[in-house]
Image (cartoon, one colour):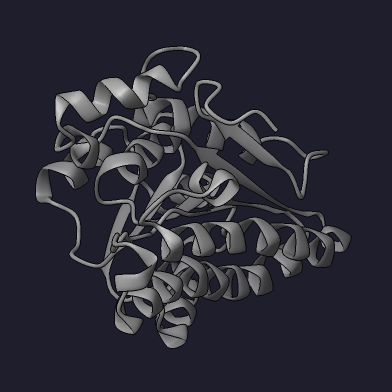
Length: 248
């Protein structure tokens, strides 16, 4: 790929893009010709990177902590120097540490809030400075149906994802004056490595509450994210992708 070709391509940054939903999002944008920047705690596998590169795009993979403000700034400095623009930011990085409210350790509450909510804030703040100078850009934050309806044993996770919904609206109002859109996607139960570990009895009970009677696929979330990334007149909204589990 020539340098000029690289410059002509758009750039998408996906946090938590090494596997699961994040990996599917990265593939969706690569399919559309975006250069891809991935941020994750453990780094991407070589096979994941090669699969993305096979789509004739540039892929950069960074291992780091999204709660580190300086790390977020360093990523933006790299993007500015190597890709000139950041067109799409997808804040997907997140963790769960589930237990009942009465038993939840402070460290488990703090860790989930820090990674899920503060990490999202850090990358919005860092990316927004570039996007506002560009006078264009799309930010999509991955929330959750749990942040809308709550769930037993997930007080920390529900709080972090509900916080993302509020953060999305506030950021949308602040950044709209420079043509930057900020939206959220709230997935329901999606078939990933995590849901594969759920016992069949529990999974059947889960499906009974979903009108479409099936789990979502990572590609369903990726399609929703890509849709929002290409809408210039939608901002501050949440797109629910949950099979009807929660109807707002």
